[in-house]
Image 1: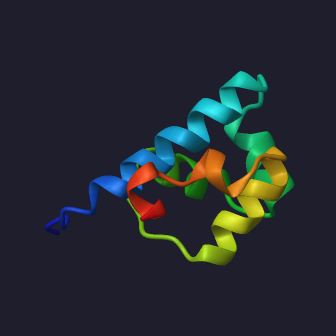
Image 2 (image 1 turned 45 degrees about the horizontal axis):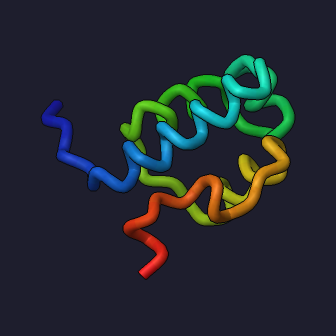
Length: 78
């Protein structure tokens, strides 16, 4: 199976999720529970390995209690 290259913005989004989650001393499993997602999905998001729906981003944002600006890569704010 050949993996396709996903946009760098997905890695930036994943980095932001990881940064905020770890700053709150929250595990991936706890974030998954709060966002009603699978822990494996959180791992893939943080690694920038999957493209996700905006509704999934909204669930993560709510679970982390952060703003959209905290999560979104600056490149997306043009």
